[in-house]
Image 1: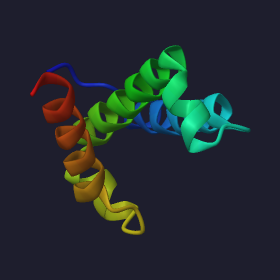
Image 2: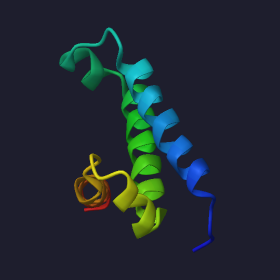
Image 3: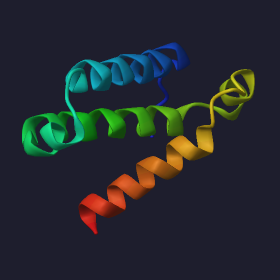
Length: 85
């Protein structure tokens, strides 16, 4: 696994989170489920968030204790299992 600057990883997380918000703004649940492109875009951004969070060092994670890093990783893993399972 390549080393990536922690600032870039954190930026990836923030940009992807904002993208999810932007893509789903104004959608209700039913509308979201009917829009396959948006579903794919949201899934991809959750993957990016999970991968970036997974690549952060323990030291960085300790510096930002208000983020539940294990839950992010767990969600990413469940997402993969749902898609690939």
